Every structure is written in structure tokens, then in C-alpha cells.
Length: 348
Length: 77
Image 1 (cartoon, chains in turn blue, brown):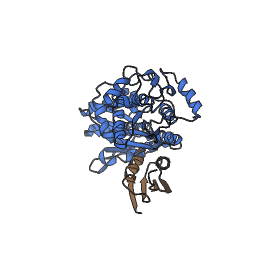
Image 2 (spheres, rainbow over the protein chains, first blue to last red; image 1 turned 45 degrees about the vertical axis):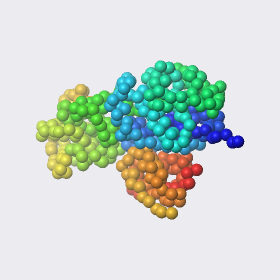
Image 3 (tube, each protein chain N blue to C red; image 1 turned 180 degrees about the vertical axis):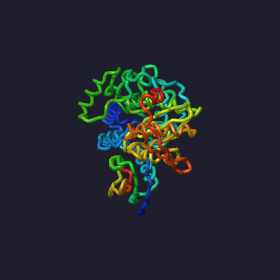
Image 4 (cartoon, rainbow over the protein chains, first blue to last red; image 1 turned 90 degrees about the horizontal axis):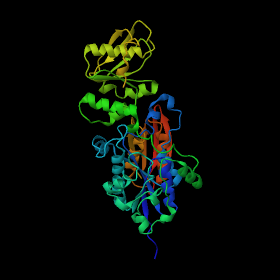
């Protein structure tokens, strides 16, 4: 009688740990496919795609690259809408910034479980290591992920399994527990050694730094957005615009998004029709979006700030074109704001 | 075999890949999906996704700021 081919779905981030976890399980004859979730806050790709100076850089998607190295299929799932509730209402709170890491991991494992059940997969694997991350990868929180995701003992962490109770695949003999690992803590040396053993010489910078929500400056801009709107909600365009340009808030009721270079200006062009926007026409300069409601006095100040970031910043006067939401443009001749007038606290 | 088109312009990666993946899932082996993107990263990502998921990139070309990728749907193996 032939044995049943057991199947595992792996959370693949594109980092080294999930890459190793997959290979460890593949070596035991398990069929593995990868799943990668797109929250909208993923650092990967976006900033490189937007900024002109980065456009010569390698823009490979690390999750796809890892899947190709491992010879597995990868399914990329758009969870932007569902993720809003994770970010806005995390049961376990936030980390150092606006990162709801524990709720995020619970949610992703839960989604992987749904996928596994729908597609006939037996268990889920992740590259988690006990003690590696301060919030979601601790000895006391890893069982919380298993329990609250609903995965229970169908969640196997091959890199640290020996530090945890045996899971279903181990108890059933689908995988040999003795061939799993007992990594713990923040040291990367065991992972590096295992990577060398598998012949992996090229891999993305080890885990972390892949989510904008762990970034202090990004989190500050997100909180500012919520405060200014008086409600904690966001759309995909908001997420994207927080990644681009200088954000300057001269008053609580409006802010400016100032393109920093050609690539960002081109990206902001796509939002011209839904924001009041400004651009210098007597001198080269940035495209500036105005987010909020602005009086005539505010628009003059916005024009002076626009001039400040133009090539005419030392000129006596700069002509700035202002286009309203009705598409009608007019010209303002203004004195560029001096460095002293541009208050540091306006910068988000 | 049928020919389909997908507009993935103004989307940043990985969204063009996700849109292509979801559309391909609705098509039959041998069908061709022509994907138009503006993020040049799609030139790396969509072919990589095709290679690992058993589909074939028939052609890629640029038209101004747009990148066009023709995918022949595989049989899922």
C-alpha cells in the first residue's frame, strides 16, 4: 500500500528563516507550497519602484525568489482589506511602533489554515524561532499564535520544534522530530550554519524590517493621519502616500506631500485629480499634494513652501501653479518660505 | 485557446502579480493572458511567478512607460 503524500503550506516571507524551514521539511519528503500575504505595508518593492534613484537596483521579489530556489509554488494573497481590522483593533496591542506583530502572526496563520483546509494540505509551517522577536516569537506567545489562529497542533515550526511540544505531524510520524531543530534566541549563527549546510549563499537580509509598521517615521505619519481625520481608518491610497515624499503639516486641518525627486513626482502625478496640487512653473520644482481643507491663506503658505523646495528657493519670487479639485488652475507669485519660517515641528 | 487582457497599470508590485495570478486561475490551459503594467518590477516578478507555478511567458515588451507580458496558462503542474 502506498503512503499518503503529506502536504504542508509554508508562510514564506522571502527571508532566510522561512526558506530554511521549508527546506528542512522538504528533506523529509513532504510536499510544500508557499503562501505570502500582502498587507499593503510590505516594504518590498514599493519604494524602489517609486524612487527614480532606486530604479537601477535589483527589484526582485524575495518571496518569489525564495520559492524558485526551493522549487515550490508560491501563492500571493491580497489581505489589504481584511488586515485593516488587525491593525486598527489588535487584541494584543502594538509593539514599539504601530506594529501589531502578535495579532498579525495569528491572522496570517489563520489565513494559511483556511487555505490549507480548502486545498487539502495537512499542516502549516513557519520560520519562527523561539525568542527571536520581542512580541510574536516568544516562548509564551508562540502557543497563543497556535491557539488563537485555530491551527493548534497543525502548526509546526521546524527551526525550533524541539523547544516546543510535539505537533500533529511529529506525533503522527509524518515528520521525524529528531531531524527538526532547537534554535532559540536572537543569534543568527544557527541559521547561517544551516544555510551553509543547504548550500544557500544568497538570501535576503534576515527577518524584520519587511513591514513599514515597524518603522518609527512611518508609524508617526500614520498616527498623524488618523488624528487629522478624527478617525482611525485608511484606504490603500493612504498607505501608499505615507511611503512617498516629505510630509509637512503647517496646520491641523491640512498637510502637504512634497515629491523629493522625479520618481516621486511621477508617482504623485497619479493623485492629481483627487487632491489640490501645486507646482512651480517659473522654476524647476516638486509636485505638491495638499491633503485636507485649505483657506486662501493656507494655499498661499502652501505655495511658498512649494517654492521653498524648488530651484528658485533663493529667488525673490517664484510662480506657482495651483490646481483645485475642479481642475481649474491659477498662478500665484510668492516669495519662497525662508528656512527660519519652515518650522521643524511641521515635518512629520 | 482564447486571448485575454488584464490592466494592471498604476499598481505596484506585488499587486500586478496578484491580479495576474487571480485571473490565470480562472482561465484554461493554453489560454493567453496579456498583462499591461507600469511598474517595471513586474518584468521580474511576473516571469518568476510563472516559472514556479508552471506557466509560460511567451513575450515581454515595453511600450513607453508600459510593460506588456504575455502569459500562456499552464496545466497547473
